Length: 153
Image (cartoon, rainbow, N blue to C red; front, side, top):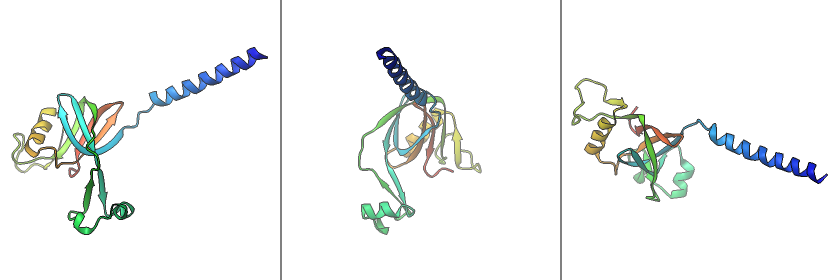
């Protein structure tokens, strides 16, 4: 009887461990974060923020925000400057509003710009700085697959 109980217990533990492991392996849904970024070589450092709009009335009340705190219709809440880091994938897509000062700007083209050329995105970051710009960062399997400026379409 002890052998049967032991075998059932081992089988149950193995099943639980296998199930937990499979959940992690099959997680193919990307995670989406919003915040300020910094990039060094192929590592993105993200300082997550909370993007609050008029739709977030409960949060506005909780933070005691007023219209004067949201002159452009939003408030960026950044209670912590802690960062997390992610490796940037080779085929990461970068989306941002193209500025006239950029070397690849062409008059008459749509200013909403997407590229997989990291050097173009780095030129954009150099021209605007990163401390005031907010980006949506999509991470899949630990790699950044998409970086999108908040105001880019």
